[in-house]
Amino acid sequence: MDEQKLLTALMESPDAIIAVDADEKVAFWNRGAEVLFGYRAQEMVGQPINILVPPDVEGDGELVELTQRLFRDGFVRNYRTRRLTKDGRRVLVETTMTPITELDGTSIGSMLVIRDVSNVERLHEDLLFAENLASMGEMAAALAHEIKNDLAGISGAIQVIRNSMDRDDPRCDVMAEILAQVKKLDSSVRDLLTLARPTAPQLEDANVCFILSEVISIVKRDPVMKEIEIVRDFPPEVCHIPLDTKQVSQVFINTMMNAAQAMPRGGRVTVKVSENKEDVVIAFTDTGVGMPADVMASAFTPFFTTKPGGSGVGLSVSKRIIEAHRGRIEADSEVGKGTTFTIYLPKRRRTRRTNE
Ligand SMILES: Nc1ncnc2c1ncn2[C@@H]1O[C@H](COP(=O)(O)OP(=O)(O)OP(=O)(O)O)[C@@H](O)[C@H]1O
Ligand SMILES: [Mg+2]
Image (cartoon, rainbow, N blue to C red; front, side, top):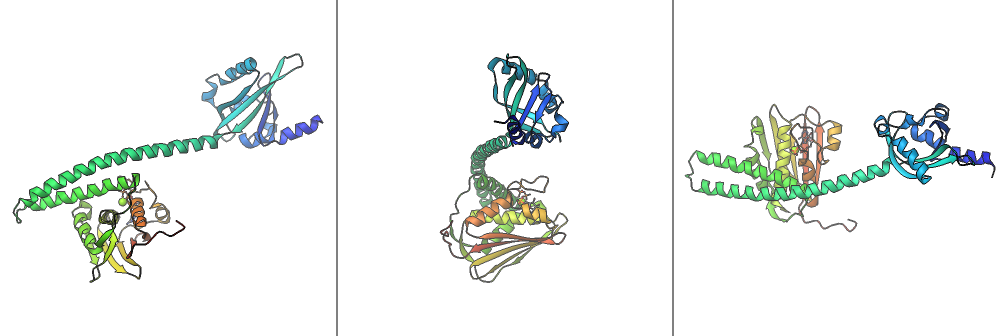
């Protein structure tokens, strides 16, 4: 085959192919190398190859080691290392090296074929991250489970004490406060559990307005509610629908707390219950700071938070719970005016659609 044609093919190869001379200076630099490292052939030919070696890697004497291996084994295959591009990025590459020799065997340099394997590594890291997350989830679930039992114990004990007190004993109110705090703690722990290990809702007929009243009495005791007025707009008829009371209470608590936290200087939350043909509709409207478009786009993403002490699980868990009930949750917001979260819960048990 015509040598010139061979050279042109090597030049055009999408793999980075580089030849270096005995002084470690670049003698050949093809199109693939230009793409991978960002240097044009005219910039690199005649330059020392170690321009591509990040300073900390060179400190390890890597080039010396590679040359030694090349002479000892006659080649170096798939050597994984970091290299530096023209714009300062570090890329993970796999290099295969072959010596270039004279007919009598004297070495006059080497040929390198280099592949960018950063993506492969990223995939591997993603996989590791997912595995870590899964085991962290397991740990969180185990811990949350323990705490949940202890909380149930505390709450039981407080109830016993409260029942033994006179109704007009002023300490009754303190007991009610402790119970409310324990319930909120229990709800946070459940958030964590739901995120780590979601459980199917145990549906039973329940009264949405009753659950809301209960939730309001719990959150009202939180200091964040101090300057906040809660307005109930409930229909006269009773809204009984199939739902998991504990899970749905958790959603209502999360939504009420978010509303309150969005009004650091006080304001109003209106809780409106209505119904359409298919759903009971619960709307929480606050007069808080509102959400700009970017916050709105990420609000339901796990661990997304804009609060200094926030964990960013409230909304993602709430969405998961509502969707497990075959309902949906929607947000509507205007910066500086306020936000409405609307929850649709089906009146009848919806069966799974066949394509799910
Ligand atoms: N009513 C609201 N008004 C304004 N922003 C809100 C409202 N509800 C939620 N957000 C925004 O959505 C983000 C995510 O809410 P989410 O409840 O998931 O997490 P969090 O409240 O930050 O932390 P956590 O609920 O885990 O304590 C909040 O940090 C906030 O920026
Ligand atoms: Mg929240």
